[in-house]
Amino acid sequence: MDVTVYSNAPTRTQAAASPSGPKITSDFNTFLKMLTVQMQNQDPLNPIDSTDYAVQLATFSGVEQQVRTNQLLAEMQARFAQMGMADMAGWIGKEARSDADVVYSGRPVTLSPNPAVGSTSVILAIRNAQGTLVSREEIPVSAEPYQWLGADATGAPLPPGRYAITQESLIDGDVVDSRPIEHYSRVVEARGGPRGTSLVLQGGIEVPATRITALREPG
Image (cartoon, rainbow, N blue to C red; front, top):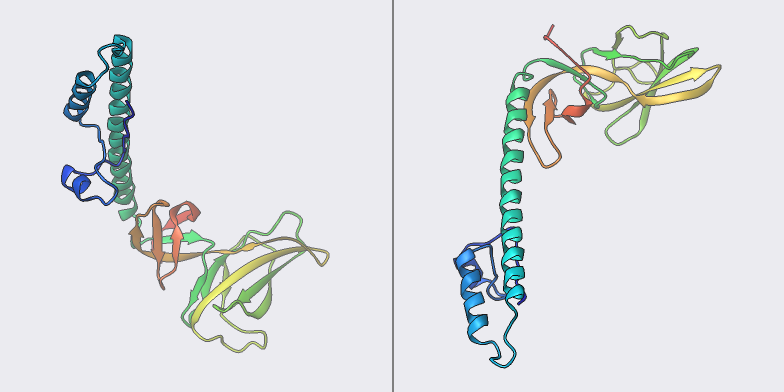
């Protein structure tokens, strides 16, 4: 006897209303009724071997256990997600360091450079929200915090907005490393989702929690 089992089992009302017809779930009473009907309608001259019944019972029991296990795993995953959100709640209001885009509001932004080993020069490549390169700025070869003032290639102030800042490490004029530069921004919200917890930074930038490399108190 073929039995179709759905791990995401609908209710009986939903099953009856489904356009694809009734669906067999992990309801043990339903299975016993089907098994009884099978016994009543078997060929008297060629009865079903008792071993087949035992195999069906064992198969159903295994499937029923797997369905229950899946439900328990789903419940555990939901609880772990809630625990993660509770932990992230303590991050709200703090300043988090990440390589997310910078939201420039007209005030200097503190960047955290990390030049490649052996670099002889470091260049910041600044692109606006449309991806257009608006400035290239040389900074000291140092891991010390750097105050980016938000100027374009001519030195004029850039308009407020979202900017992607890439740190290029050069050795004798050749780029040996290029990566988004890290900076601090205040955390205003924590969000959960299918891909894990993410943080919303001041200005609306959303970044996965896994990309946060440091936390500090504001100021």
